[in-house]
Image (cartoon, rainbow, N blue to C red):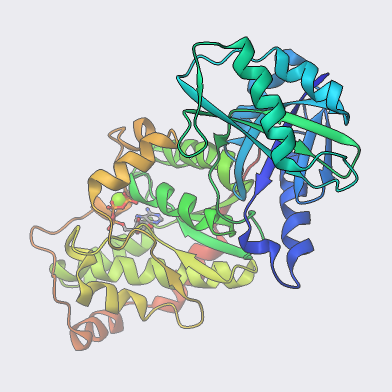
Length: 386
Ligand code: ATP
Ligand code: MG
């Protein structure tokens, strides 16, 4: 009798021609994440199976699997060579500390001589005899004992299903460029888009010395926190000081933030395209701040001419975002008090209904192409690796 881990993935991508693409991607992602632990990972029909691991590594393996997008749930199972007696030996040891239970059997191996319901009933009877204070409830039991008789000549018995993150395997939807600030929102936005299968690059705009080295380090730390879910991230740090100084010197104060954000989007798209990203991702959230009114979003949106901008948090409120941020372990870092470049030269009353003609007039005062090219050619690349 071996302790193994059964891994379940969604039915969504089990359909259609692309089945093996998704399954192989998920398999590869899991293999990569577990590469430092001695174990055997294999495919059995419609599931993955982990065996031959040191019992001391069990919790570590479970903790990693709980961060892999595409997995629906996992179970610690007992594996035996298929026979009634072997299954019985496992089930005889089961102690139920709930009030009711049922046994549910899946018989994928049709050569096994008992039908599913017969096996469930017989094993259920044995468990009941060994746990006399418990009753059988086939409709809403507090505990379900699962028996799977599979085609590989093995059977599995388990009772707990540990929920995983669901979503799609990272990389199956291509690559996105996350605009990563040091705030609460953008790491969560990256997490959520990665959950839909995007792998990530990230871009951060840094205005040294107006923003500190700690502010940059905070962004690196945040990328290190979310990489646990998103996989490796290539982070582009863009020197943004000159652009902000130029805008501050030459343009209308109230348009400062909007102009800054248009530069960000423009640069982000150029860097994204150069690095084979097919979408931009921001943590924008409707009506949260002046730069996130519909009008403000419209005029920054226009700067990304070729790529879509994904804003997974657009309708969330801060409580919901903070909850996810806490769950993924980013919150404490996000709330450290280091300034973001958006708050440098912040005007007293930033425009909330920006007008395109005013933007155009302001941008004519700047040598945009030169400033952008200069910033891009001085990008620092930091590889954030698992
Ligand atoms: P966050 O909590 O993510 O910082 P926020 O509520 O502070 O968001 P803004 O400052 O308006 O909102 O930023 C909106 C979005 O713009 C951010 O979620 C992020 O995607 C992007 N952004 C802001 N500042 C930067 C920066 N310095 N570098 C890269 N992207 C940024
Ligand atoms: Mg911010």
